[in-house]
Image (tube, rainbow, N blue to C red; front, side, top):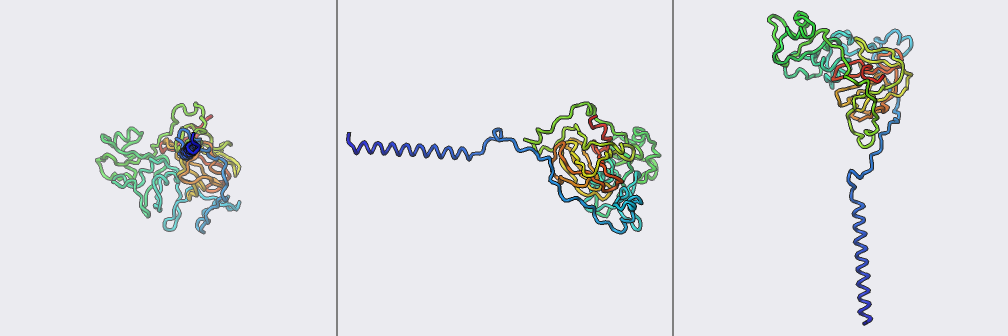
Length: 355
């Protein structure tokens, strides 16, 4: 065989091998850079539940008028203890938010939702705060004066076929009871109502009842949501205790919450998974507080915190530390004030917590 022909064949083979090797290398690099399907991707790291403490929260500076509102006990102890529900100053006097109805001047940023949280009212009851009729019954304007209903009041929205007589009968009231409420605006008989009208029913708030079987079911782990579904905003409705300690005040008329006595600095846990809707200072008695919407018609509130480890809009897992207990706001000693709303209605948290 001709030597030059043999060398040519060997040279072509080498070139072919080099080209094949280059093609394989290019395909391998392309495959490595191609994103893996979601099903093959490794799970996201778990939510870090050990908080990084922020600087200790400090109460806002008090004006001289606010200092006059300090309780004698607070003055003796040299600590800032706010009177309950100091909400506004009108002319020469400061008003408190008592269990009864009271007037309030709307501030920028107020909504019926935030006012219900701050004043310890049911969200549905706050619907009877502006006017009984009109397209703007839920609209709030800074400077507008509204009437915050009493704790035991109920707001009824009229549906077709309703009469004042059957509304009164259904809630154990008389027509005279309803007409006597100035906010309702009934002046002269015959008293008629129209669909979508709001009627404030005095003292008709029913006792909130727990949903069935919530205290008998086992409390499921939230680990699955802490990995692949870190941003899952919905709780499962099976609550855990936010902190362990003796109950210093149980739920009762005028205090639809649990006060759990714990030393200052005790970690506070989210009772269920959800989204933080408020985190910070409340000017009306709660001190520093966190509010979590669990996305399943439940909302929880944690008040008098010394430090807060979460922010508005953040999704937190069940059992995640959201802050530590403190002694600010309307308080005479360190404890956690814990509220639970079911469909906007304040309920007794113990009826929904495990035994």
